[in-house]
Image (tube, rainbow, N blue to C red; front, side):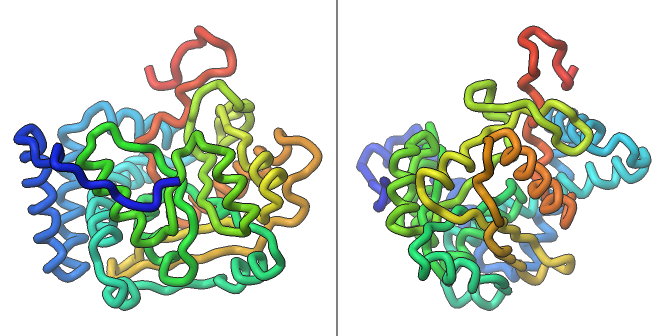
Length: 308
């Protein structure tokens, strides 16, 4: 488990100076009110939409696949808003990593903390079943105001970004566990403690089942929640965070523990998990990460890509 951000003199190497300059620019935006940051974020998102044609294609295709009955006008509006919200997410991350606790608390509401408390008091760990909504970094920081847990993360290849993300995320977590270190996740749950878990991305064929996700009948979906809940003797609590419609703050909600989870087989659990993911996404579709190639893995190897 990673419990400290390790800084080395190698990070001062000139090859990293452009990254540090970018960090300096990002930190200057902390002086701005949240609404001003969000206006800048919207503009950045619109610019990205003009430049990142590959990402635009992926997001558009995801929306088409998930919502085939949606009108073309509504699909285009959702696509446009998705990129604006993606630009805003840059500032969500900046604020989550560098705002003070006082400033975080000025811009947050949190609901359902009693469900976490009840589970931990009963000796059972908590799996926060989240989706990749765009303000997720801020969601973790807000949750940390109440009960710091264990973050599951992917180590970054760039050493400066690795240092920054570890340092930033440890402001809301006791420690960080690489996403492949399942044993440490289980130990943390049995402590008991809280860990984050997401199952709404395509992680390939390994340990996946092909089940419905919105209108796509065969989306590759990992089944790790079943194993973690069983081996970690933990409760699974759906979790959602969103940015206010007027960009003045963030709302976080933790829902009651799922009954009878895990069930008799992991496929049924995964189907139930996808249904929960759909419900959470539908609460604020434009703040979901549609830029990920959710359906890149097909049930039959060699099948045509859904993104061509």
